[in-house]
Image 1: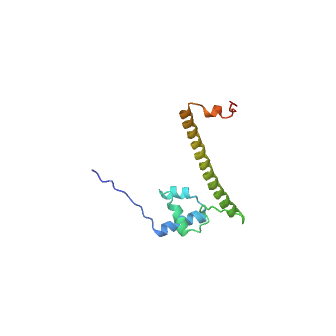
Image 2: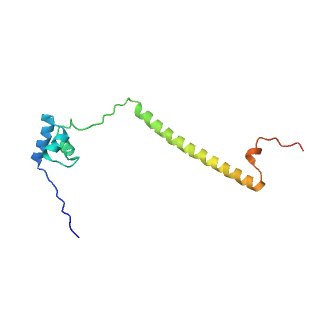
Image 3: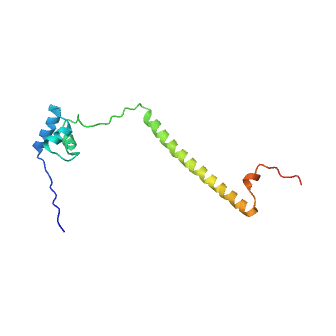
Length: 123
């Protein structure tokens, strides 16, 4: 069995800062710097930007909400849960009634669904 050797590349702090500086000051893209310096890790430069950069080049998600929106979202989420429970209950009831109809049909050799709307004879 052969042992596979893995090579780990460690970059010095000054090199990392140089790469971050090139991105921030010279306007190079992350993929361009990756190609120039043969940096293979996909998140490597992102981590360097977080650590040494000014953080203005990182992707950020900003969510702007009105004051009542958060409460409305919580309300809607609780309503969805309540409706899911109600749907499950009604589905169980429907299944139970269908099973009951099947048992009655077998026991009395009739079709309850067909005879349901008919009036009983007066005799």
